[in-house]
Length: 146
Image (cartoon, rainbow, N blue to C red):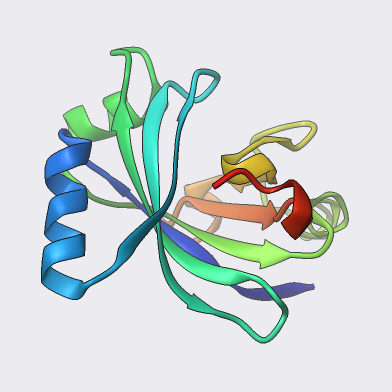
């Protein structure tokens, strides 16, 4: 069962400049940064608030580190802006199977490693009314890297 909006992913050309905008304009703070080689991005997670299920909601700012990454291709086609929405779930495997049974294409056969040790998968945007949708199971709090 989906429990919250985990994050909204925003594709950008310059991570530092985009972080500066969100921190100076809205007062958000950078909670976590990392490079995800598999996805081909540098990212910053800006924490928005805590949620009732013990998780949090974030903005995920994504800058491609190579031209062949999905985010680089998306930026070339669409420019900067909202890339995807991610919903939190206690069990990404079960929820991915559930939506697959309903005819929604799940882009990964098995969930992959996401930000802060999470497990993730994506749903095809053509099956989600044009929205690239991510399902996220957060890592246990004690194992999250900040």
